[in-house]
Length: 303
Image (cartoon, rainbow, N blue to C red; front, side, top):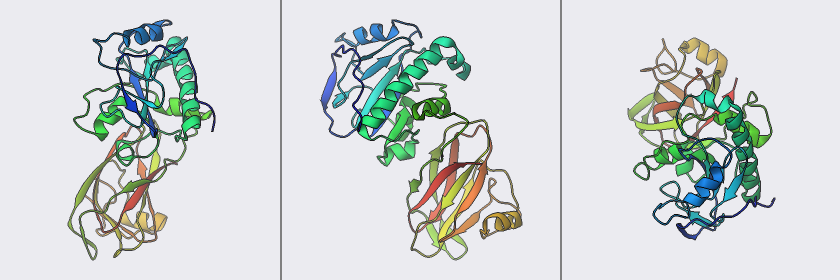
């Protein structure tokens, strides 16, 4: 593994104990101006004993500073452990387009280089994590708002606000943001109560996905074993497709004809097969009501 970054160090006043495992990198916004000198100002702010917070790194368009050593817990996301917090000097307001400006772009590239070094030093996946993946302890990159959604009540923060996640992850991976990678399989727990051809009881889950302006596919993959597969009662984001079209394209058996993947319709994914569903542009959250007697999984794929 590579060495972690080593920018100038200004020790924060408030930290926790040691963390031996690092699973994720959490991106924050400082609610301050995006300008050169901003990171130094925030690092000095962390010196103030009355400000009960800290982060491992602070980045502005021109510089970055380390305020907490990587294997020390910083007070940055409500749960704090097994993570590294990176603060970006941003007001956390305004549209996504603010990141197209010269100063924001320079800071984004500087932060991507820092995060890339951290990922390579600690074996962290260079991908955006969903709240479900955070709860499952998977490795990757997320926002403070994702920590809020993963652990309700731990924090109320919503930074980094409107953020160009696709572009940022592409910069970290040294790829174009038009080359969207597959999202790795997201494990889903068994739930509900199956019966032949349907379900008597249903479970609910919600999955956050990166926002993009193009269609993608969600792959529903049943687990092995059990009676049959996954019964999906409701998915709230799909284009409507007929049962015949679904069976012709994917070989899936649909429990009720007339609709497929639209609100209020249900479908059945047999064991040993998978199902690909089209997600319209701009969808960032998927709500699913389902039944499965084994653990199953989802994966996001470009069309």
